[in-house]
Length: 144
Image 1 (cartoon, rainbow, N blue to C red):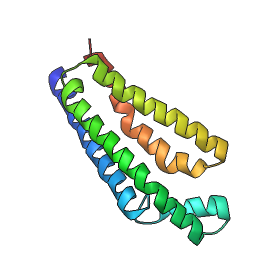
Image 2: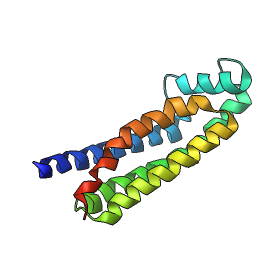
Image 3: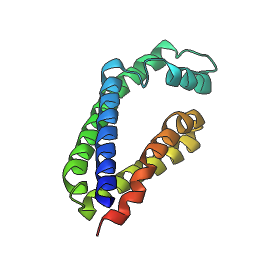
Image 4: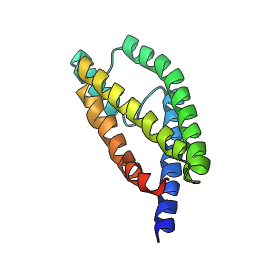
């Protein structure tokens, strides 16, 4: 029974790794965090008091999302390989690598969002990411 549960979490982690790698690739190619424009609208409202980004801001965001998306896609592919091999084989370093990398991102991103008044990012990105990763924290019991 415990083996099946752990196997489920390995599959879960691999699936969310692929999902986020695809999302990151979309950021790089489209120059946007979401095709519906929800993030862009929140960003524009927060910093320019309008519902669309000014042209220069939109261009800057698009240019910055190319390397950010590419780097994030590479990170999530790396996470997939760690999940498939080290994590799946219950090697503690695999668990530690995934959890510590996530926590570093989460805390640094959240603090910087608070510092810069980007509360919308915490709601749109950070809290959903935390909810997605919480189950992984509870798999620690499977590692010796």
